[in-house]
Length: 278
Figure 1 (cartoon, rainbow, N blue to C red):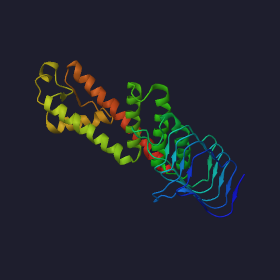
Figure 2 (spheres, rainbow, N blue to C red):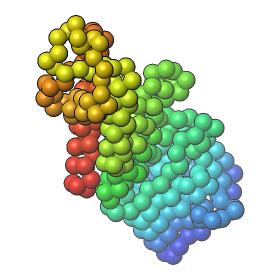
Figure 3 (cartoon, rainbow, N blue to C red):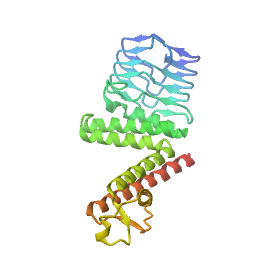
């Protein structure tokens, strides 16, 4: 059990054997890889930081953990930065704690095995960073860490090359992108309305509700009618003065737009509420 009264710098240190900092207390900062250093520390075997207490910032930028990295039950009172760090072995962050308002940073998972050579090992790390981001009300960052946490968990269950993983990851990325601002949801809604407007107008798919079926098929849809019908269908208002032509597939097209509109409107309400509550 070691006690560091002042800042501890291990820049350029190379730990060839087991590095045991269990129950160590860093009264100020602990720096194993400052953010702009060209000589970060390297751990060739197990790096044990179990039950460690760091009173200020902890820096592990570009540090390479070739063996297991154990941060179980560690307590960080300042910012914790693992930007550029690489974990080649098991990474354990179970029950690690942070101080509310502080930052916990890890890199985005990449296809070349960074920062976690085994993707599933990043689950607890990303969960820790996600919780820290939610605690300081940084919703955009928290949503990204939540996505990466899901990817790590899904990769361990289904594999990164499975269709289930790719479809799930793609849909979740889209949701994260949408959640970053209500304007993005409104933009998607506008694109949908205009797309269906163009479809209805180019295919003469809309006619007045009172026109007999024989005349409805030959009715020439006006541009403003197609736009109006697209808007009221998307918003699920459905005044009834216009309707799709009496051809079965146009009815399903309009129903599909209405369903999409309901999803987009609900998403807008959720995103806006999250922003206001945060």
